[in-house]
Image (cartoon, rainbow, N blue to C red; front, side, top):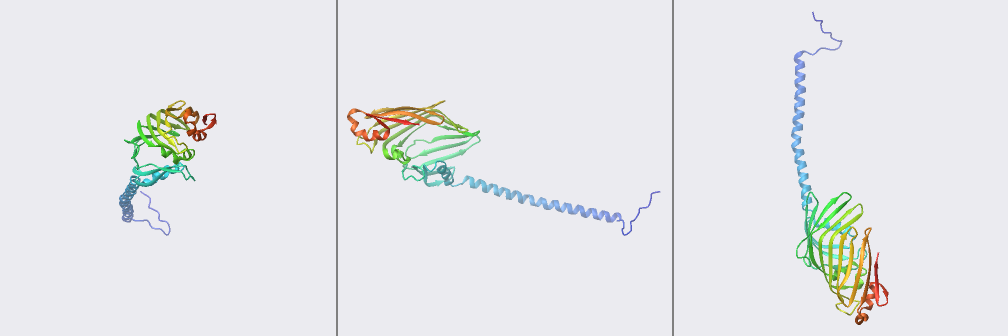
Length: 293
């Protein structure tokens, strides 16, 4: 025979019907809590979606000046963007070369400079163009690397006014060259890792019918600068034609250019070119010795 349930003083056992009512109330409370949490989730997802859409809209329509301001700062103000239009991804501006902070030297590129950026999983592709100087877009592909980057440039041909060099400051602001610069690149790749830079490919710059305010002789001549990449990139300067004779050879060693060259004039034009020879390098009789690095 089961023992009777004991009742402590001051207490009373709940009956079975009352226990069922209490359990039902607890279940209803839990169900209501679940319903409340369920109704909050769609609002949370909607808010997250709105914020994500706003972020994407800002990124897609980011003003071009965000990009140009970063480039100007990275180049210490030597390249300035004016009358900037468009977005980060597709924009245009007028370019101005300067001698850097505190310099009063400046030269503006004729026409407008445009860019079109396309990000991808492998990097960032940029199509660059200039009204004055490029017949078709010059494509650059920037790929991130561990502690560095790889920049691949498409083969290109372009023509630039030599007067732009005056905007770079000393010594170009003194020489004030005039003429045309024909630039061509082939299989050009620049890689940088942990502060070290490698260049492969070929760059050729022809300076055609060059003259200077330091000489009454116009033009003084035409010249070619050739860069050949490799384990030790080389730089060569030769004269194509003209009274001012320039030649030289250099190498990049430890990311620094070491160049030695000679400037001279044909005998019948020495007087007209004497002032310029004094500027180009250290005079050694009728010659000037050019040394960099």
